[in-house]
Length: 320
Image (cartoon, rainbow, N blue to C red; front, side, top):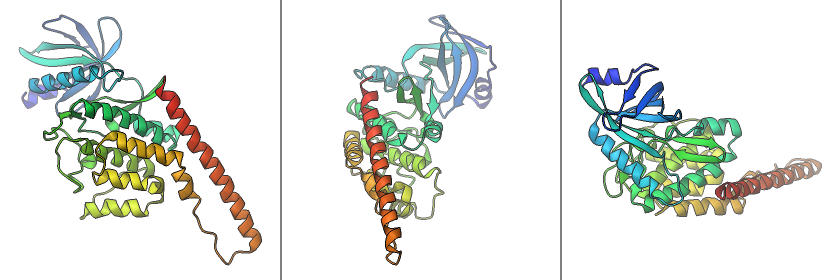
């Protein structure tokens, strides 16, 4: 697709109707949802009146690949790993056939917005869900590839994290075909772009770090050392330090292993231990020491209750 056509396709106005060449289904554009390396996605009204997401591709070959991924996602028993696929067709626009597919529009809140509103206590629950889905995806022979907060949506009923863009999904053993530098292990000097479970798990670690410290890092001259130093020194990462260290170094063979470590950390109260280890100054009066000990004890009890609540909430959500 040439630049002129790409600009036209990326700027279709609300109310424009796309009619499929083969299935003759009509989709009315409501608004643009986003533009990526392989195409543009619009929110559309489908023939039955429901909203859906329609992706117009810049490259017909990429449509074939992404449709195959969505179809494979649907074969994973009992899991909604990605959006459901509804339709695949061509749209003739200015005498050129443009391939598109229509998928489920996942209604929800972006991952970062959800955590900002609900609190960082939700990070563990959402990451455990994500690792569970990634484990199923990896077992099916795929790697998500372009894993980042922008490709994750949290639904409300029930609270569930969902993958929404399969453009970077790659068969294991091949080279990752689409990625974002910040979540790419090769960019940080921690490995190659070979499609394997550890590639996704590095991205999970970067997402956890971003959610917990509340910002992205500016890459330094020695990014490998920069990340390791951050894990050692940043207080917000203390409860997840071991898990993050293993995942950025590629020590986990499966997402299930990382998930189990996260669960064990929650059950053992790792975050409580880290927050309760603050030292009382030796030269403080004895009465102040007693007061501080009581305060630390109360904080520990409250944190322990919070950790247990989030773990029970995770288990409850899993059975919904």
